[in-house]
Image 1: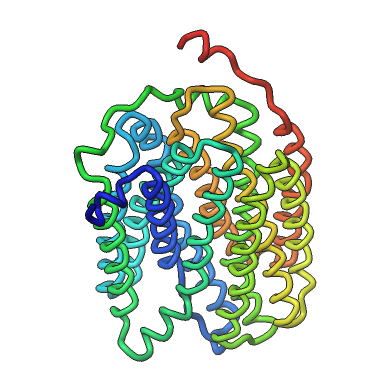
Image 2: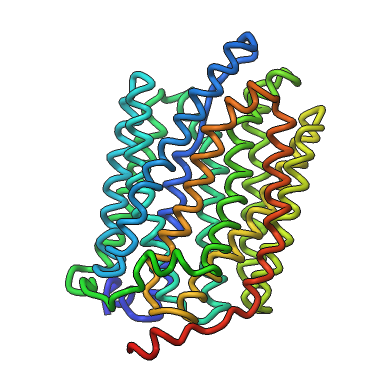
Length: 406
């Protein structure tokens, strides 16, 4: 038996699907990395940089927000493997654009192209996991492991980019990421050969039907608001630190390591525990409250040590919410609709994209008008107010209509 034949056996295919989704999340989030500023800028210049950085970071999520409602139902019809390969190819193109970018407009274009590839990888990847791992605990564990790829991408992206840029030049980190994406896409195409790709699947539940489901909306709302916390902090915190703490470049990078590491820990722990004890709703509720309290506390931070602790708390709380809600969304589809998952995870990705679009876009203008502490207070309070709605996700009723139609 050769290696490919062995890898295509059912027991190994599950592991390979998990590995490929892990790599997809890793390379996509590795690109979401370095923003330079300098403490010598005047306050007015810092506010200007804040707005430009916010628009750049928001462009990827804005593109994903636009295309996700269309690709979710499409992937439910054609399967997950072709979109996964397409996502890796688009990501290779995006990283090449980053490598040869010479001005802000090209960077904006590269980030937008990355949004298309990231959307394919995210929606198809989550759909593959939900379709492959049917049992609740197994699904939660698989998604927790896949989020490890996301966290590791964020952890390694900034220091890797800085080192490569300093010693090998601006193009080097992007070309390395392009090679990783190319190898991951090639591995996927090699294992899931054309004859194995399912091109026609059972027709999934329409997007509008899922959008009318109050349970799915609550789950999506929790993901959106939790994402809004991290997106706003990533955009506004570096400028706040430079203004109030005159933070150095290494400090600006170091403070975000703690949130990625704690996210990695939380997603693995709660991805396993919350489905096991059917406590996804409770974990999400507690995670949102913790995220809200921590976000409000940022406005009172005085030094880098405060920020390190608060970032660790934010990363942990967002990891709890994501790892609890994502498997639960697949379970809601199993319980209430036809088990085709791309559309529901397109909704989840839209919720994430709204958070990553709204946060960076509004952070600069709000900070300029009322200040960083008030921005943090508003975002944190909204999360705390929303959190109790997660109680409705406890033991949702079964939807029988699709069973009758079947």
